[in-house]
Image (cartoon, rainbow, N blue to C red):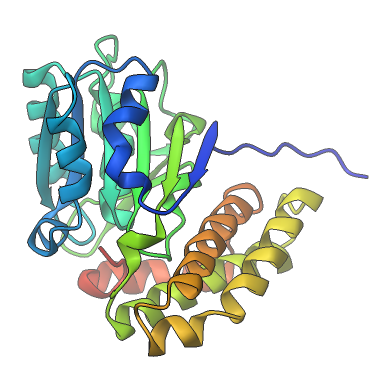
Length: 282
């Protein structure tokens, strides 16, 4: 057997209504001040309310940043970072789709009191250094798998993007609460679901860093999603289908985080820069 390394999140909580006890989970981690990073769409739908309410019953201050946009720009990073530093938060929660989760990763790193790096310094593979704040990721779509990957993608110009890749972006906890995905519109369910299935296919068929662990994750991801995506699209409130899609997307994320995606996603990167609003779901 060839040598390989497999890295993923420290802890995964797969539990219905887990978001409603987010403050309890933060208290178990001895966190004292939390910033929740999300987007206006999540706030408009009220998907975050149970999570926010859990903090009302706790002694932990919560600061909600909801200005994340599709394919977040550097200006969004700077805005969120300024607030995180001003409020002296000691933990970050990403709550939403891939864009919110990516912003949360970067803020957890750059808002750490000992961080000496600027955003431009961390672009590329392995350039981020030091420590980050505790990080919890809560996906609301079954697609990007960003809750268990080492990558954050930031829009740097009108048609350009840049990425940072570091094990520091793997969260302390990934929370899979399928209730957050109930009622997701059919077109979003289909688009994010196909994206996750392609993650699994590329991880399994690619040669670079291919390993037995990523193969197991990819095959199980495809089994779950192939058997549930039609039901999830046709019946947005089918809880079993939603659970299978969310778990499948995460497993696909674990697979491609360790056996990277290849030509399909490479071809998509320039298209995403030219058509930014179509490349990543909230």
